[in-house]
Length: 268
Image (cartoon, one colour):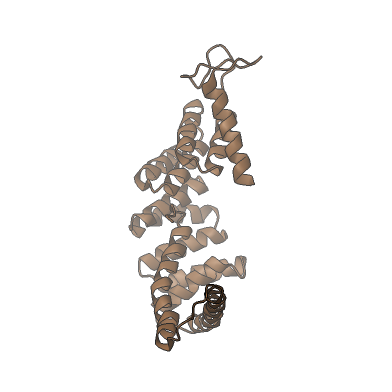
């Protein structure tokens, strides 16, 4: 419902901008976002419409509106950060880097811009470039669990696994039972050959996998019976499904977690 409401808000706002309908206070030129004879849209209004477009999934429109807001208030870093975040979701990493750098020109210690720039550098496979913005952000907010997680990922990318694990553990002290931090810690430990945490996690997953497989089998067998068909017994196929399927799905799952971590655009 939230996405529907956001989409409706965007549609209404853009309809007003493009329709040229005459209202008591607004009389818009269809080709001019500022209006012809009516009141000019201010910075805050354009930012709200951009946020609504973003929430509704219209990322291209959101970027255009954030850029328009930046033109209305050129010294404010917020529209550049918002544009960078949106471009990062769209997979336009180079454009996102330029947007974050523009925000940092206006406020060189803006925490969100620093974190966004670091995420963008990690997405390009250049963790060494992420070090400087992360260090600056850490000076401002050393106890931010999300920042600690991002620094840990950069350390893991650089092969500094012990430092990364220290970041994850500190993050878990501040935010206990956080799934992302726990997963990253387990992955980092696995990279260093420490399976004390990874082993129990794997042991917990296997029964769930077996339960899912058994539930799917029961459901499919019931459908086969309705159709007058018979489920062929294939023990070897079942074993291969339980084991080989996980070998295929696990790397894909890890890739999905990494994509979510850096807030990249997800492709379904």
